[in-house]
Image: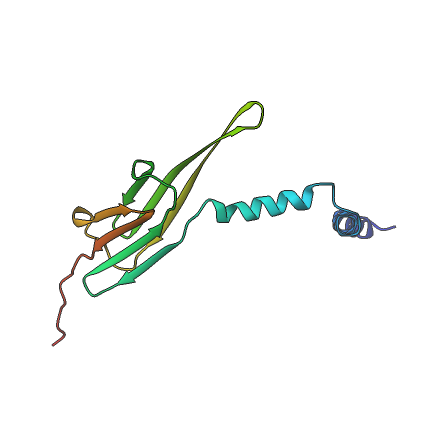
Length: 149
């Protein structure tokens, strides 16, 4: 075997090794629980978010977020020039009593960042929270329109 054939075999060998590994990955049964773990991971993305509606007029954006079971004190709002981030820290406490006392506490954080094409007047943003509905009024900053002569 010539030295160039040896070099070619060395280059092909890692690729062949990779192909064999991929064939084995897709032909063997997945480890028990692997698919469930993937479902849990991708399914949990929905659980860490909440629905948001945005309505735009010529002077402002109105953002409505549905946060059932979240108290006003559990919500924080960060406003930037072109985005708003809403974060809600949710704590769920359940008490079960079936012959013995059991307390279950689960906690999580829900968060959404919404971007806007036009800048927001951060000083004039207002927020209301009632019956699990958060409403933000986000006035736009009006720029100067320039006429072309």
